[in-house]
Amino acid sequence: MNNSDTANEPVTRYQDAPVHTITANGVTYAYRELGPKGGVPVVFFVHLAATLDNWDPRIVDPIAKTHHVITFDNRGVGASTGHVPDSVEAMADDAYTFIKALGFDKIDIFSFSLGGFIAQDLAVKHPELVRRLVLTGTGPRGGKDIDKVAGITYRDILRSTLTRSDPKEYLFFNRNAAGKAAAKAFVQRLQERTRDRDADFKLRAMQTQLKAIKKFGRSAPADLSKLTQPTLIANGDNDRMVPSVLSEDLHRRIKGSELVIYPDSGHGGIFQFHEKFAPVAVEFLTR
Image (cartoon, rainbow, N blue to C red; front, top):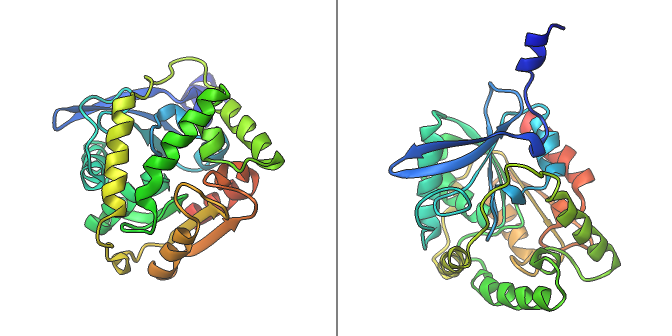
């Protein structure tokens, strides 16, 4: 293999993924790209109060071995410009603007939590854009108790402040021995990228996202029978943020969907069980 071949090899580790920007409708979106180009890209939709730095490399890297992966900061988040919208519909519209600006007519979506709300709205409005859908730690529009996310979030931020730990240790994981160990390992993995890290998440942006989540939780349900794409749904069995029963609700409402529930785990079940889940996600996206 000559040097030019090596130079053209795709980046497959998230910690090394270069940062790019693209401007559309007056907003400059920050994104990272890795994996082999060509084929249908997998676009990752991130959770509440999260930036590019919040994706678990143990989930991204296995997918990027064989797929073109794109992670991005939606409007007003991290290094992307503009203000965070106060509705999930508007977040979905911004995601659509970003994806079309990159020139894609067909994508796969990998989503987690709030990202899953946005992904559903996008897929319902633009079904022709989405080939496959991965919905993790999430639930449907109007889902029971989604509007209570704000209260749980603020309470756990306070608990984490008092114990000088990351709020995600409380929000994403059970507070038992297995959960605490998984939480520490997850938070450490998020620090593996040491250079060119994203801008911090701002408190006001989080407050606006929580407002949007509350509206989403109190809205009339969307018609998810419109979603005919192959869909993989996953969660832990004890999700306190977006109750696990809502993953089962999604599974019932999206015809032909597949459901994976991990035992003794919370909102971050896919991160706690990344060694089991990553191969399932790769197989689903490659099928």
